[in-house]
Each structure stands twice: as structure tokens, then as C-alpha cells.
Amino acid sequence: MIPKSIRLMLVASLVPAALFAQSAKELNINQAIELGIANSKNLKLSQNKIDQAVAQLAVVKDNVLPTANASFIYNHAEIPTSTFTLPGGGSSLQLPKRADAFVGTAAVQELVYGGGKLKYAKESTKLLADVARLNADKSKEEITYAVINTYYSLYKVEQSKKVINQNLESIAAQIKQAQRFFEQGIVTKNDVLRFQLQQANVTLTQMDLESNRKVINYNLDILLGLPEDTEVKIVDPSTGLKTASSLNDYIGLAMANRQELKQLDVQNKVADYNIKTIRANTLPTVGVGANLYYINPSGNFIPPTNQYLMPITIGATVSWNIGNLWTNKNKVSEARIQQSEITLQKDILSDNVKTDINRNYQNYQVSVNKIQVLETSISQATENDKLLASKYKNNVASVIDRIDAETLLYQAKINLEIAKADAGLAYYTLLKSTGKITQ
Image (cartoon, rainbow, N blue to C red):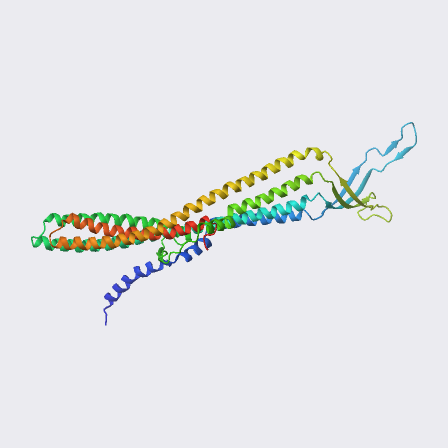
């Protein structure tokens, strides 16, 4: 039977591991993207702007509805002079000491034709809601790319750390071997010190990498909406690099998907409706309405029979600001200039998009080719390391040659891991420039 003290020690040793397990989370890149989108405060702000645009559309739709108002007035008058004599010495009128009256009105107005301005306002507001949605889509793409970029940065640091750890293990073995050779009188103490110095330098690199890892991990936690002490466990995102399509394919995708280009198309339509609205100012407006009046001079809230009036009127109004026929043309010209500016902006942006895609396309091709070159260099560095290890054992090569060969090998390994990550990120960068990063 295990003694109680030992059982307590075992439990105590398991508690930190359990706590660490609770704060660690393994995520592949797609899961990270989903979390980033779900918890993004920027996307929530974008959704709020969409809601505002939709609410504004509802307000504009309400403007089409008829207007109605009603009022009810009570008047009380005190009349100090109750006798009123007509001018010229005529007869006199005897007035009451006080008087009360009730007057009520109710009116309904409906705009039958306003030159189409209400229709154009509704369509323009719909388009502005579309602009808000496109802004949200663009924000989603930016957030997705930010998550991918940070995810790959963490992956690069972790892969570099793995290679560094392998390097330290190899150096530790080299130190033991050098100590043994020194004891046998094969090498000098300087050889041992050289390996120990290399170990110290690599350890410093390891410390810097760990510091960078913590910073990047914290940033990723914030992006994903995770508790700040969560250790994100990376799943290799660089497996199965995709072969790029042709450059023209990506340019075609960008012309169809880039949110900025779509926004300019929508803004061009808004400019069309703006021109139509200005033109509508030259047209007449037609409205109909009905009015109900209630006049009760009896002084009683409920008047006696035949002592109140309730006329009802129905009418139509046609109005036309004729002056707009000659003052409106310059406003139309100004609106057309603004629309042509939008067209020019789209042409400029289209050229910028093409150059952006071409640059990202070439960068991806270079990144993939780098992997092939580095894989070859690792094979060469491995052979060189084995050769120098053998020469050093046989006391043919110096300790500096041995260390240099090993450093070249592990640096090549680090460069390869970084190149793989850079290629993966370059592919996502290419997709981002098409306006649709998740294809």
C-alpha cells in the first residue's frame, strides 16, 4: 500500500499539469479562423453599421406612408366690456361676460407623385446598406488574414525552437565527446570551451525565441477571443502546399470578388440615383388630402343640437417650381462629374489590384522554389556535417570547422521550416489579394 505522504506528493505533482492542460488549446488553422471571426469586435462593429443602414432604409420607406395629424383646442374668454356700440351711433350689442369655444381639426395628406424622389431615396438607401455589408465582408477578410498571419508566425517560432532544441542536444553530445577526447589527450581544453561557447550562444537564441513565442501566443489569444493565458497548440499548417493557378485566373477572381471594386460599383449606382433625384426637382408634385373641422362655440363640451359645425374638405394640390427648369442643369452637371470620378477611381484601383496580385503571385512562386533549394542544401549540409564529424574524431579537422559544419546544418533546417511557413502564408496572401481568402 502506498503511504499517505507519497500519495499527497503524487496528487500535488499532478495539479500543475492539470491546470496547464486546462489553459492549453490545440487548434488547426481553420478552427483558429472560425474563432477569430466569431469573437472579432471589429466584425461586431461592422454588423452594427449594417443594422444602422437597414434601420435607415426602414425610415425612408416610412416616408412613403401618408401623414396624418389631429388637434383639439379649448378657448375661454373673459369680456369686461359687455356692451359694444356700432360706429355712427347705431344700435348696441350686448356681449356675454365670458365665452367658451371648442375647435378641433383632423387632416390626412398623401403625396401621389413627387417626381420619383421617394423611390430614388429608397433605392439609394438600399445601396448604402449594400456598401455596409461589403465593408463587413472586407473586415472579415482582414481579420481572417490577421489570424492566419499570427498563426504562421507562432508556427515559425515553434518550428525554430524544435530545431534549436535538437541543436542543443547535439552540442551536449559534442561537449561530452570533447571532454572524453580531452581526458585522453586527443584535443585541447580549448575545444571543450569552444563547444561550451556554442552551447551558450544557442541557448541565448532559444531564450529569444521563447520570448517571441509568448508575445505572438498572447496576440493570437486576443485575436481569437481566448483567455490571455491560453497556450495555443499549433497544427502544422504548411502540409500539402497547393499548386498555384495561372496569374490571369487570380486577376479574374479579384475583378469579381474584391470588395473595394464592388463598393465603387455600388457607389456608381448611388450616383445614378442622385442624378435622377436632382432631375426630379424639375417635375411637378401632386398631393391629395382630406380635412375635418369641428367648431363648437356653445361653451359646452357636448353642444346642444345644431349648435356646432363639422365641415369636411377634400382637395388636391399640384405644385411646380418652374425656376428649377433653368437652375437645375448645373446641379446635374456637378453630379455627373462626381460619378465620372467614381469611374476613374475604379480604373485606378483595378490597375493597383492587378499589380498587387502579380507581386503576390511571384512571391508565392519564389517561396515554393526556396523550399526545393533549401531541401537540397540540407542534404549537402548533412553530408558536410557527417564528413567534418568524422574528420574531427580522427583529429583531422579543427573544432571550428566542426562547429561551423553543425551550425550550417541546423541553420539550413531552420531556414527550411521558415520557408515552408512563408510559402503557406504567401499563398494566403495571394488569395487575400483576390478578395476571397477562404477559397
